[in-house]
Image 1 (cartoon, rainbow, N blue to C red):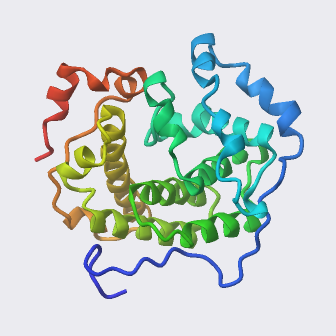
Image 2: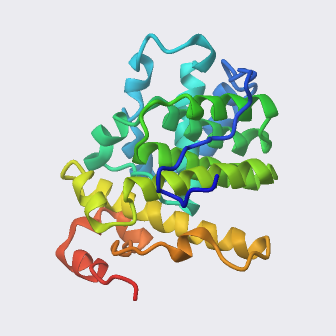
Length: 265
């Protein structure tokens, strides 16, 4: 693509012309066996926060194609495993708090599918090619290009890189970057205008941009590139708050807002 990112860009999310759709109806040995032992390690307060968060999943869009449906018990637990493991290292999406439950329930299906895909890796430790193709196809088929799609592509690119799908990870990250710039996620007003009045969602958008920036730079260094895309993109976006503040809900306090108001020079 010759156009600069965000300037009349065409988003070519990597997929195959005839993808193999094989998202499992159940993950063998996880729904009733190994995953409960993982969840038992949660402290009581954290475990309580999960209660009822995923109850909506049984009813989410009954017209969803059968190939994208999971065993409901396994699927809910995969989302919990996502938060227990991946979210701790990449706290981009909304934290599981009482204040964020409704916002999490509004997550689009494709983002939920990516979260489940990531959660499944902590059981199987590998990402099957069919699973990768299915999720890639789901992302590529989304008609609405918004911040949630950026988030889905971003966290999926991290997963692809971790599973050594290097070329696919690079392409997925590139698509996420181009869409983020085109949406103006590098600008302060994007986070506030798309927050629906929630300081948590506003912080989530900020974290998405800075995760893109850091990951783009890290991969450029890893592959010995002389520069990286986002290094040349101007931004007036506020820095994110501390991870601990985000997870505990302190993101909405005045002192945190004041410290987050410092824009990197």
